[in-house]
Amino acid sequence: MNNLRPSPLDERRAVFQEVVLAGTGFTHELSRGQVLRIVDLEGNQAVDTLFYNARNLDERYSANDTIRRQGNLYLTAGTELMSSEGRTMLTIVADTCGRHDTIGGACSAESNQVRYALEKKYMHNCRDSFLLALARYGRGMSKRDLASNINFFMNVPVTPEGKLSFEDGVSGPGRYVEMRAEMDILLLISNCPQLNNPCNAYNPTPIRVLVWDRA
Ligand SMILES: [Zn+2]
Image (tube, rainbow, N blue to C red; front, side, top):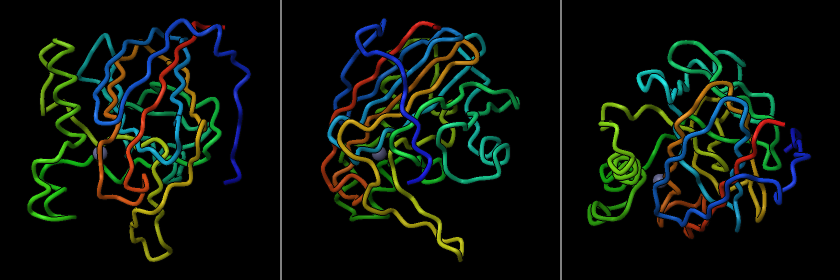
């Protein structure tokens, strides 16, 4: 990876820190100007993530607007994460992994059956983790609020022929991605529980979420 940009921020100055276990959903509100860091603690984890405008939950992350804006399929430092209203929601300001996916989607009971085996239907999956976290968040959000998501640290290369492949990860222990909120944001994470996919070496692991106030 050639686009690595470390952060100058000191973990001891973070105003919020939480470890999110694999298979767990998580919500957190960010104020405009705050900086969010997601740390891949053990490496090769997939962190399924969605963003909403905390003031207007109908405005949410848009993968296709983000891809079109930068003319590139992969997310990294410098990427502006765009909303369904064409506005910049967050800007990626640091990245020690180098590449993140936004086309692979989130795993679900249905995709577990189709990709792996019929009896995988009842395994934990990101779509259910998203919905459980939204229900706990308690502002009436549901399936209709799920859009195409980001998979931080996940490696889904696109071949010259345009094919997608889910590959062994490009991340490693302690790698992180950091982004600045350009509006008040609701963050929604499913730390992927997937046991059937080489992108996390068949071993889902915890992440750490940190937040800093504006510098
Ligand atoms: Zn998943």
